[in-house]
Image (cartoon, rainbow, N blue to C red; front, side, top):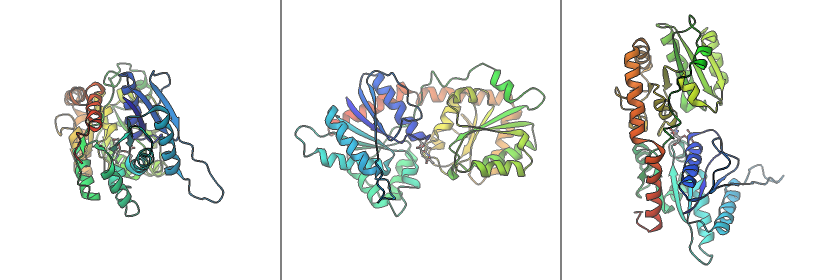
Length: 382
Ligand code: GMT
């Protein structure tokens, strides 16, 4: 198949999933064009069958507003015409589903077949941004107009109907990772560096893009409560708007010596392999790719019971999910895990095994291939 995949380049799960899907599909013999404003975070050169197509949004002194939707639509039309795309696959509805719709309308006047459009919903494109009254009508319309729609969890499928009144069929295809790569490393060097003997007993990690939905302040509050009961260090991986406030909070709590802010990191497997526990107390999380990565590296996760997280983490079996307001509960679960190495190992191994059964590339990517086949043969219900 010839597929154009559209995504955001910035650090964020939707861009990661779209880029990994592009690599995996190219590896499986498809002709893939990854279309984005910049090279995505996870982009790797040299995969045969995979090309990068940049969206250039020219500026003009009259406009304060960059015309990204028009530039993207134009790029989709150009790439479709040059490479006779079978499918345009938009990751993140805002505004990618709308650009796909417009490109489809333009291309339908050309002779020959018009590419089908597929939209994958990721989360905040529905729950925060897409349902904002400033966007809701056009986002709902563009989703209804796609030839096929997928969501990364049952919870997000439900939220799409609730928030936007979308009535069409939505297939649930979960996020995935390369299970062979997301494996706990036995290399103790980073652990030793972060957690020298005598200074800390447990290493706790959080990875995100530090936006308010991730509740970074709650991560630090949970850590403060853990610290009151057992010696531990917290490693904060990532960057974003809430980082400064978090650093101030850490200083106010007198925890500066126990918390490291290490910024964005490419090699998350090494950081996860050093960890005993992963915290994800988000306010909303349609899937929680970061939790999946931790689980695959045998790190037990304590998370909020929101969105798709309970579909990823089986409470009490492959990690723990608590009411998002129950900060005391999240701290108690964390302490329970940190004080009991056997439980930690048991949950960590169960988590990695479950990821291996449900969320590996070679299990999930064929689900996308089957979905593309259904869309191309008009077997998808609107
Ligand atoms: O979180 C966002 O605002 C953006 C989005 C992204 O592009 O990373 O995250 C969402 O998509 C991820 C990939 O499908 C999911 O793993 C995240 O749970 C989801 N974030 C939220 O729902 C808050």
